[in-house]
Length: 373
Image 1 (cartoon, rainbow, N blue to C red):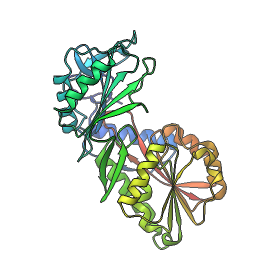
Image 2: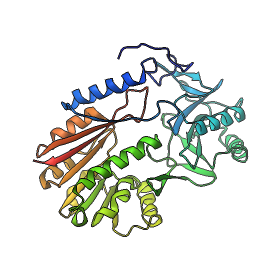
Image 3: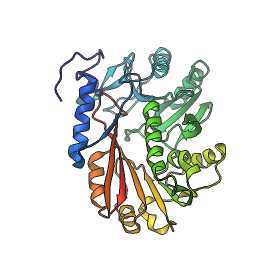
Image 4: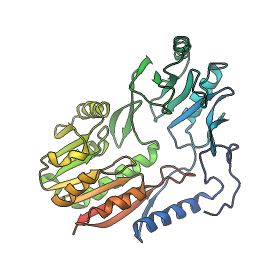
């Protein structure tokens, strides 16, 4: 990509994020579309974009001696102090300011020595909810002191939910099964296309609300192209998470099967099924690796939204053998997508779309529609 403009962010070049801010946004979109086309050997790609700034609703900030920041480009152990982030939404920046103002002179975690207490502040701000998870070093001798400080902060912050999360000093993560609720709950709520979804604060949910709705609407429109066939068809939502794809399309299918191996996400999916008054959805706690152990009825349509590692090869081979009527593959890793498509040789690519969930970054989200040959 050719750099032709001055970046708006004062931290550009030092902060490890937003690598493309010095490239005009239309050029970024054009270049990413070309990369996707070259990777998949596809000529025609539909493109969906949104505002290039203030779109993120989750950020993981690092506590450091100067306040709160993000890792320096090329030097993971150095932190660039951030007062406001141009790609974070306004509500998120407001909560970051609250954290910066309150947690002054706390015992911060040393990234090299792996000692200290305060590690991360994970902020999530969907349109009508908010949370802060303060991540502490599980082994810190000042852990109890930190708990009391956070409890005081929870009485003052405008965040609706506050968690304390504990992680071992030798693991560089910002989520954990060991956490406590200080304020509110450990779930967030977000509305998509008229339905309300609950999801774990420490779980996965798309980070760009506007593009998420565009993606969901696009997938629904693809499915409705075969509207006359859908009432008798079954929908498999593979890597279902909290059930967004399955629930948003359930009314058009005879039955929906959700397959998810993360218990908190599936528990949220069960809640969402009831909350949105669905009666034709079956949630299954099951690993996609063993998909062949599930009896999948026909005619079948599949929506798969896997993590960066892609759909498990065993699941791909099984789907390739049973040949569902259609597969919609949502991918956040287009190189893995290319590998996975090679295992689906009983299918042809009918359509590809690019969704720019993360402007100014190399990230590419793609939707591929597959039909049996």
